[in-house]
Length: 171
Image 1 (cartoon, one colour):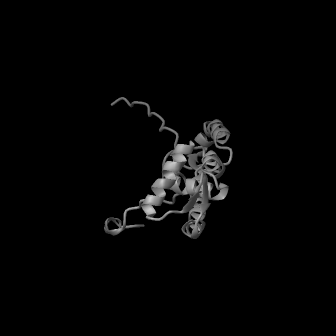
Image 2 (cartoon, helix red, strand yellow; image 1 turned 120 degrees about the vertical axis):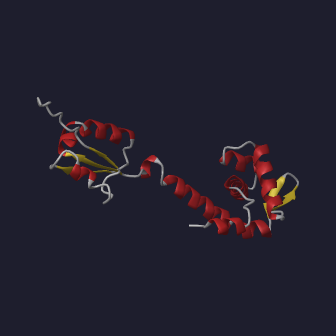
Image 3 (cartoon, rainbow, N blue to C red; image 1 turned 135 degrees about the vertical axis):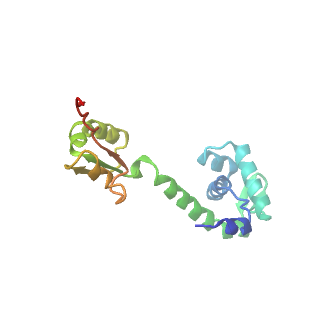
């Protein structure tokens, strides 16, 4: 983890993933129009992103020959890094998509587990089909054993049955 003093001393990033994505698309296609289409941008937005990237780097990445862009030495030297970064960004984003959803862990008393959770868990699985569900049921006591699971991190949510009302006693 980066400490606050490290963040203050670190140089400010001047590049964005959007700029790198546009650069890679144009480099692979050889055309601003085709590259822009690959990343769902207009041609003018792609041209602006490429110009911003070249300005931030202080180097031209393409040789302009008429209306064509030809990747130059700077662009060829840069291209592998944005491709790798974009792959890592896609992987990071995929970790939180429906295919790689975080698991649901539930700790509950047996009563809650038998009567309330099956329907709720079925709804969860419909909404998150790729997410695993782990359950932990406890038979003893209405409150203590389930709450005891919190420090052990066995459940991300817990539920217990309400305490039974005691009849009032005449004094």
